[in-house]
Length: 316
Image 1 (cartoon, helix red, strand yellow):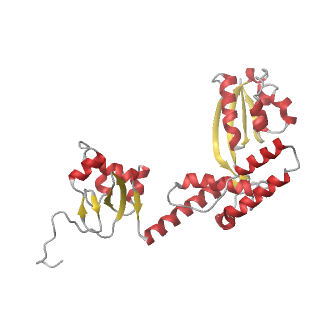
Image 2 (cartoon, helix red, strand yellow):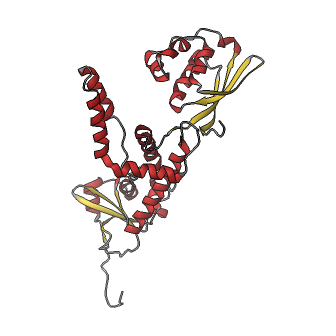
Image 3 (cartoon, rainbow, N blue to C red):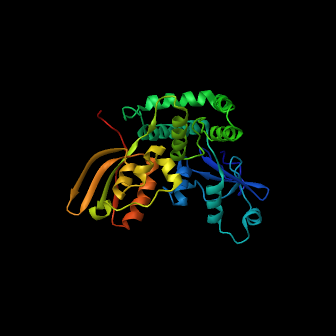
């Protein structure tokens, strides 16, 4: 800037910034932040405002260098609200504005993180082996390229196939297809973990490649004196979730029978002294029921330990 031009005192020129905007009280307020620091602040990685803000001020327009008058801040946020609290509200609730390159880099980072999470949690149902990240990426691209229209067509076909049944069954079929999850691609407004869960649900529902959730590997110990006791009858809902009606007798047997009914594959079981130990693989959806059953039936004397959250089977 030439020396002979005076810049107004309420104007501050900033470049190379990430903006966070919040509209409140009919006015739009902005803060100027360092790139990549806003997400770190929102995730709890960064807690020092000085490391997030390029300048400790609130603006009406960062591009014009126009700071927000104190009366505007008081009117919108309250007369006795400290500046730091106003800034934190804008940081937490505001909309982040980033450049095209930064937006693309952020999207790519979240995309890669989602793919890595999904690839580590899903396996081939027959071999129990994980897929490569490339295969998972192609499967998700197939789902997103089909879009919601293709999914709706398949859902409608499923409903039509139930049309010859009773009205009640038809409504149930329609209700079920409506709940089928879809996948339209990664966005930057949601966390990678939540999007990975959505992606897994869509892949399992639509099966562009054969996939299932990787099983959990658990170690379970229980006093031998409890094993032969009759277990409390399983609730109807729990019986339906655990499998077909043919397993009902097993589910209503002894404590040991009930425990083993949750375990899809037993790796080893042994009795040492007064304790029975079993190591095996459990479907993730069955873990909560097993944990509640162990806690209730053994009155805290049984123990459940997670050895691997997503175990893969390397052998036959």
